[in-house]
Image: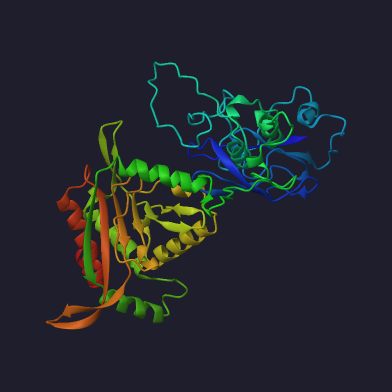
Length: 455
């Protein structure tokens, strides 16, 4: 038998939530066929089969949080027969392993295996059944780590059922895989002398037998209010925004400019045969303008390294594009965006947003950003006060382009007008630097020919 455990997906992630299985017990799979989707705190990741063979066991249900190194699925590789039913499932992998065979853990291509010590990554410290992560803390190198209190293992529906029944999961001993607590164990703990569940709990969190849990399952109360577990991207976004808002002193500046010349340029590009299939829009032009303006004000393309006591000014632009997806806000980035032409940037932005909305953004694409653009204009919003992506010094919000009465050549005329919002970390950027950067962006959007004076 071959057992496939959750691989190390990189980025310091120690756990993932199983979103869905693409296979069932008895299915034959090919090498690298997608067998499951897992959601990390940063992205939805497809897991490929490590071998060709028949699926003999699925260890976890959708909606379950799995630690790196925990078993996901067992296979009978091609050329081998499935284990005898008389052998307990939990022991089959050990029984069928050849004597003296080395333990090999399958990992995704490009991701690392477990550490040489064999230890699993440590989880965030949690308290009781509270899903809120504990505050981050640093343990000095000379200090022995403090043992963490183990969080009861259970799927989200079982946790909800326990809350409904008033059962403290910390008082139960799970008998499932990895000590996971099952629905039946919660119900037994809540059963009164009559052998019946409390009246308030009948039907609470109920689901047909064998129905897999679904991630972020919503519970609707009698008054119509809905409760959903805080998981995946939503939890990560919340943690990042709170950390950023209360760590970096934000300053936001606004600039409203006449972008009629840029809109005329975009019309000309749309008609030009040189443009081909490239979809150039005002977001593309702003992205190019950011790359140019960064050279003139490098302080906006930097980060504050508290531990080292240093300000890091980057030699390249990792251009983040905030993307609204069904799973929440993601900010993948375009590496070395300053090296791309206008058409290449257009393709990169389109591909980045499409991949994010389809849930195919790889964790590696979510790291390395140095400055971010948020296009709030697509929602009809004129301006905002965007919160910095953690570790970055600046973020630009692009508002909606509107036709407005505007002063032009001594007269009032209908012009295309847009508002740019720049939030920056005042530890790194002074008002003069932030203003100069914002004015450079406005200058290039109001008169694209001015780029010639800036490069």
